[in-house]
Length: 434
Ligand SMILES: Cc1ncc(COP(=O)(O)O)c(C=O)c1O
Image (cartoon, rainbow, N blue to C red):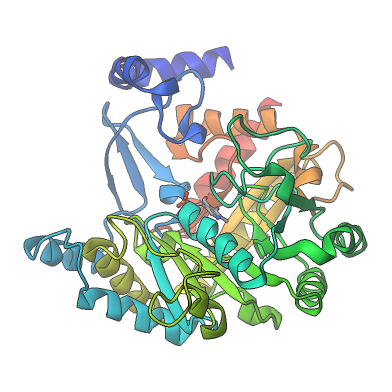
């Protein structure tokens, strides 16, 4: 590791200098806590296709892909031209614009629950509003989330994100006692907890595939059982598809699982790499936010944000969805890259890892023995996360391959089979060094 750090420092002297400046100006030098890694993160100068290029001109094949928002790759052709044209027309209106209709029509035709749509500029805001809407509709307070579920940093939902899912994640949260938490993929355990909150249960919010919590797909029977309990007991079922929406198919993951959510949140891919969050809901839910039709008492305030529905995000998102729809082979290509990688990493590490994920997303968990299962964030937390970070850092320093250390990887349309080969070769090298 010492040797690896030396190699990294030698190849990133400009990054070291700039990051030292950043530490003087910014808390911990970063603006999203997870972007920091030891000894210091390299500083990116440019990005194109599958590559990040740092200020020392090192090139990295990127598997982080802008927090997984860039399914077509960096500065993708098509999106690039549309964004450039939009820039010429101005980039911030603060008024109604037609670009919004174009994105909304595309989302609405692919996501049936989107009878009405509201835009914000982050996934965090989208889940914050989803929870507020659910509370307004039901007149109840309690919201159930999942152990390890990450829905952004709202003062409501920033709870039970990290192991042991019982300590507060932050000072300054306002509403922790109204957030309860369920064990993922555990029907009995979850229903038992929900029963205790039944009368005041406003909503259950779940990712159909735990993203930040370990890249773990939910079991269909689990989601169905939780949805059924919520609906039978007058609560709102919210699916957070901010990572999964348009990631595996042209639409959401829920449609493939026979689910019928009341609210779905989207983000990342649907903004084409520009800031976005989306609340999609049925009319009967969204009417509670309608300032013209719904009486003020009991109405939910859903609709602020200087930059909401700004023409840049609308244009980039709309063009991205258009390309995803037109290029029919894209999802099978991404699925094939993901599958080959999961198989290859499993083989290389021979019983030392469980590789989770589906489609183009994958995460390597170093397990104590090959029989371990990784079906929840609790299982993921028991794995050797330090070793995963080491594996990722080795690749950054020596092979020009970038994963945010410890996080899952995402393929984009800019990646090819050659990337699977180089990743496999790097993994092989790392295994031999263990
Ligand atoms: C499932 C999920 N929900 C919400 C968010 C928050 O989105 P944002 O970072 O855009 O606020 C994220 C971010 O990674 C996420 O993975």
